[in-house]
Structures are given as structure tokens and as C-alpha cells.
Amino acid sequence: MQTFETNSEEETIELGRRIAERLPRRAAILLTGKLGAGKTTLTKGIVSGLGAANPDDVTSPTFTLIHEYSPRVYHIDLYRLDRADQVATLGLDEIFDRDAIVLIEWGERFPELMPQDRIEIRLRALNGDRREIAITPGVAGLSFPAPTATPPAPPGIPGSL
Ligand SMILES: Nc1ncnc2c1ncn2[C@@H]1O[C@H](COP(=O)(O)OP(=O)(O)OP(=O)(O)O)[C@@H](O)[C@H]1O
Ligand SMILES: [Mg+2]
Image (cartoon, rainbow, N blue to C red; front, side, top):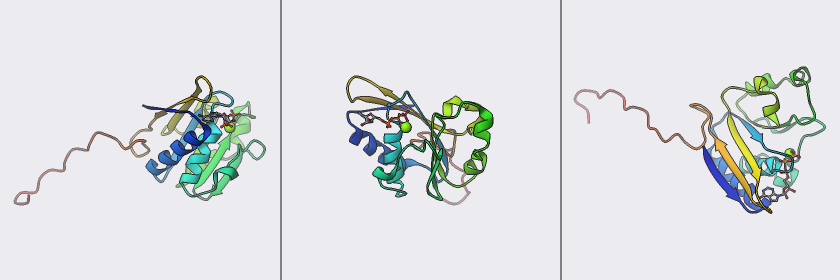
């Protein structure tokens, strides 16, 4: 887990842009934290960092529930849903199967419907405009930041260096 602190909305957007640079082609990103913690703000940075939309055009998809910013970038907000059968009608599995970055606010409310292999970003308001943002990378292949452990070297080929 890696933890960051930001002191303003702009800094959180900038952190989102930096996260975007480190993402694999396909990732489910759960954004957790209370109302107003900054989930949508961080999403603005990630989506703009991916080049899929301007920050101002990224808003919580409260009525449509899913925003498609590009065929590779989706933003889902499950706050208004309270039953798993409602979530099932959204066809999330089909979206998770795509080579896409899928950002999910309030996904922790339906853990059984979220992919096992996911990146979790927990946001917490500290005093004033400070926010603590903790990132837990997913398992191999969907990790942030890049895994520190290097894979074992392949067996040497006799006669080569
Ligand atoms: N460091 C900061 N990072 C992010 N947002 C901040 C920060 N400081 C203040 N804010 C303010 O906090 C609010 C965060 O709102 P945002 O919509 O991103 O939260 P949210 O977690 O998505 O909430 P919701 O659960 O309602 O979807 C904004 O009004 C933003 O201006
Ligand atoms: Mg939000």
C-alpha cells in the first residue's frame, strides 16, 4: 500500500494524473471513502490523465450510473443503488471484461460484484482541505505502482552472456 496526502482539489487531480500514468491497459479501480472525501475529484485526474476527458467534464454519474468517457474509460457510481439485483442490471461484468480502465465509486458496497483483481484507493478527509489517499495495488498484472520484486531471471543459455 502506498499513501499520499493532498492539500487541495487541484493536488488531488494532479495525483490522479500521476496514477493514470502507472495504470495497466485494464484495471478495475475501487474508490472508497465517505461523502465528499474526493473520489470524483481523483477520478477527474485519472480520466484526464488518460486523455479521455477534461476534468470539468468528469462528474459523478449519479443518474446514468455509468459514464463512458471513451471505449477504454468508464466511471461508475453505485451510491444510489442498494440491492445487488439492481447492480446486476448494469451489466458490469461485460464492462470488466473489456480492455478498459473502470473507476467505481461506492463499489465496496457490493464487494461480491467487484472483480477480485482490483486496485483499491481509499480516500479520507483530514483537517481542512487535507486528504489522505491510500492505494492498494491489485494482484500481478493490475498493479500500482509497478511491482518492486523483479521476476526471477530466465535460465541462462549456455555459451551466451
Ligand atoms: N484535497 C482535496 N482533495 C479533493 N477534494 C477536496 C480537497 N480539499 C477540498 N476538497 C473538496 O472536497 C469535495 C470532494 O468532492 P468529491 O465529489 O470529489 O467527493 P466524493 O468522494 O466523490 O463524494 P460523493 O461520495 O458524494 O461522490 C469537493 O468539493 C472538493 O472541492
Ligand atoms: Mg463522487
